Amino acid sequence: EDQVTQSPEALRLQEGESSSLNCSYTVSGLRGLFWYRQDPGKGPEFLFTLYSAGEEKEKERLKATLTKKESFLHITAPKPEDSATYLCAVRDQGAQKLVFGQGTRLTINP
Amino acid sequence: IAGITQAPTSQILAAGRRMTLRCTQDMRHNAMYWYRQDLGLGLRLIHYSNTAGTTGKGEVPDGYSVSRANTDDFPLTLASAVPSQTSVYFCASSDWQGKGYTFGSGTRLTVV
Image 1 (cartoon, chains in turn blue, green):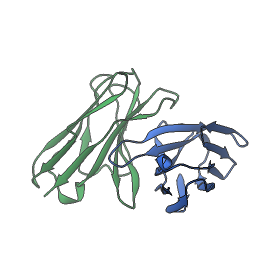
Image 2: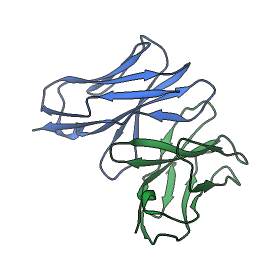
Image 3: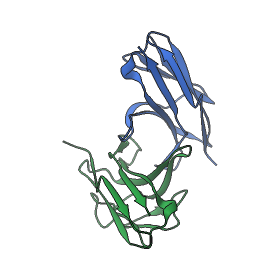
Image 4: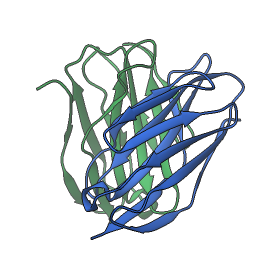
């Protein structure tokens, strides 16, 4: 059974203080690891998809990396507008549906 | 604007009543999904449809039904609502490769 575990559950940083969010996963055959951002009262917004170990993708202050067992979302010099819940999900081979972790609630204080 | 439209945005429903949540996409995605999101439990898959005319059960299907008569619409029906179905419901869609996985803005349902 596919499993996704995100840590920490919540993270509070000062503006400019870089950190990383973790997503550990177990799948029989990975067909994509997805990162989403979710603001309160809204639907998840797509950030990245990673397909193979060693792959990296960047967008503004965010960089996602992937190994065979986990993915990291690195946040460099965050700003208050980066505050949100970040969701990780995996897609298994032979399936189109995603399995989600519980998310990390990130708060950036000015 | 291409995307997913969900309706209603929010609803308060008496227990035992029937309710259909609507979802329409205009991206011609072949796959569609319904998730519920509860505090501390994350997003859990209720039902999915890989293509028009087919549906499948997800992680938490009990008490819900779906249909997929065409590519664009994927309604979710609660036949007889119970308080444990109080949640935020998200519809999503993707292409056949699982790419372009897009979510709607959600329906907040309260069953009293």
